[in-house]
Image 1: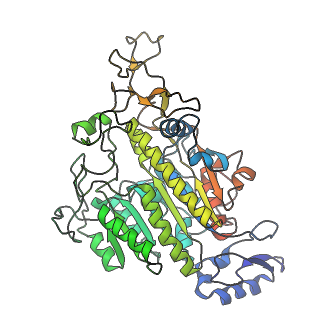
Image 2: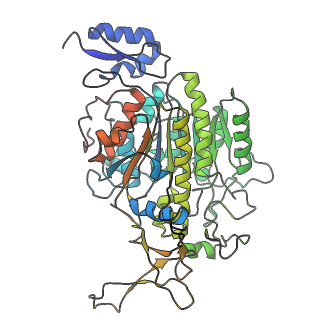
Image 3: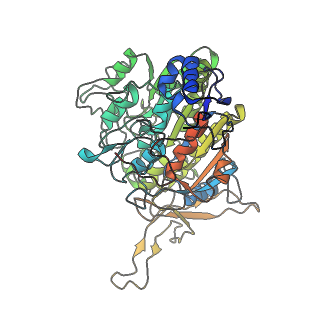
Length: 548
């Protein structure tokens, strides 16, 4: 080994920036890093390779990874027409850097939410079915080392190095887009174990807790049979029931993770009122730094069922007029007036998370790492709920706008936006209309003589056979009507784009313009947080498969 090997060390261990790479003998360099950084040396700081192949310095910074699940280019086209008009611009459109995302798995061309999230979090290819922080499912699921060589995700590695981390999800806490950054389980459907690991760490590891966790999934935190809260909200009662199914708490081990979290120092909030009160307090007091767990629904914050099922369940807001372009369906939260009504939006939760993480980062003198998943864009499209999917796209775009403000406040921040698949194969169609103005289905393949001119169903504003959507005006002032057609209820391998702004965002163009593999999401996050590329045994280019 060359005695002049270059290794990055911090000029000041508390700095939020990696400032220099010095030329020194390897042993002396490691000793200097350990001496200067104290305990942080044992958390992996000294194991990083050169900042670049040329030994030049690169700045470290914050990372905000926004994952609007299931959004292909077709989804954004529909969302743009609905919210801004075909000639308008979304916040997504204004992100300056673009790359074509490739989301295939180790064994499947179509990415899964759990497999894609694991690749994002660990930087390696895994099996499509079942993988959740591991490769495969059940007894055959294998432990995965990240591309850096760390036994854990990039978020767990960052937290162990003293970086403040957090997750936001408008689905439940166990949704893999955020959960796979913190939990490693044999089955994606073991939500109780996932929730436990998110809050209290992985078994056998000394994982520091996240600074903020916001989403749904109260039913995975409370034991089955927990009573519903009355006028007072206590740790031993449930605030939320599922608005569609009526289901409540389901833990089988008898543990109350709400009470355990409070005993461990978490500030727990579960209603819109508690969220608003905490947000005001955080905004008013610069020195206020609570560790926050927010749980605002029994399961997801949204009701991922077809429009017709929501109508049958009575989830219709009578205060909205029949011609409201957003429709009358209650897609987020419970019925008006219920404890689950009007949960915080993904943008509002992101705003609170960014405020808290920025304070923790300043105190720790380290960058922060936030992962935000808008799960509603995926689940509502999978349910073929067109108005829900369009509204979810508007909420996802609002999150991107909120995150962009954080980049404007601190340019040493990467904002990266990427989905992992195309939910439902959503397509805009010019609606064939019935005599009363309602949308009808599309003709099937006329050469198929086994059926009588099969009609493929399309959605209007309240589902099948309802009035069409109306786009915002184009640049000439014209408004077009449209409907939504679906390929089905599954995810497909559609056209997905990754976009970025801020620190290192130009790498989407210079390094990943031709292909951004799902494993390279990890790579871009890693080198922004740590100012170096991952150098572990799993590194070595896109498409690297997980191994023992």
